[in-house]
Length: 407
Image (cartoon, rainbow, N blue to C red; front, top):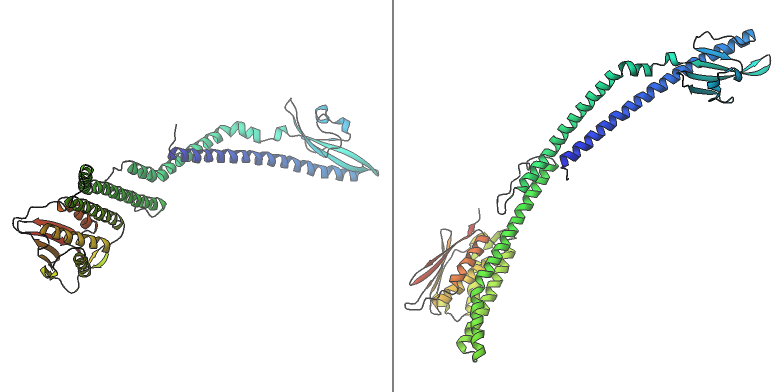
């Protein structure tokens, strides 16, 4: 069973709390027992000093003045239970018997009549031991208080675990509920700590992933939509070429299909690259002039049929490669639909760039190009946050481009 981070944090805090309580309880018991032993040892040392002084004064061992301490002049005089646990050479010892006695032994090296003598002080300290009695008398109260403190510490650990992990759980829940294409917003993004930083980074990452996904979907849709027509033309031309040599019209059609595919692929890749770049200031008039020069180089068209009405400087916000592709496609489509004798008018007024061309009366209506190119040109304009509108007519065809102005 997978445990949540709150359960693991609570288990860690609770375990540490219980361990700390047990350690301090054990330490308190050790200190109590050590203090008790030190007190008994101190009593024996004081009695040893008194016995030594009396021996020097009277020349013989005298009984102890304490009811708890007995003076023995020989090792063999000690009780059997004591001799069984304390060797003659030991300076001190502690003996627990099965009958309830608790002995402390202290060896004394004395000098009587110029001769060394070893005496022993034996203290039966069972009546004065207070730790065990204290445990029996108030142990229940101490245990109850300890359990209450442990319970309080566990509640505090649970509260801390819930309070610390709740923002992370809320962040995980909001991330789990994100839908493809939906708005990305995390409620913890305004926190000044690491959770807020994580929420902001996740928000940015999810937004970028959705942008990449939309770009991939748009690229796949554009490839499927824009390349189908030229591929069909090329397939038909090649099918006819298998039966008989390709005529001049077929070669022109095949070449036109290849050119359309090359131009479309160029636009698609430029569009995919440009969507990852921020907008910048573009001199639109210079782009239009370069596109016109390219149009004159590639197509047999009389430049005197051009009418240009543009300001001296025309700066807009956009992407230079996409701007060139958009203008080139609009001019090429104008010449394609209007024919080599069409008049082209380019004007800019009230924030709108208009590219219009004349259409000869009685000329067959040719939709190849714009019928599949409008969607692609709209995507190019949308990538730069521009607006583009198409106005077909019997005698004229006009494209209005509204670029993003500099603020």
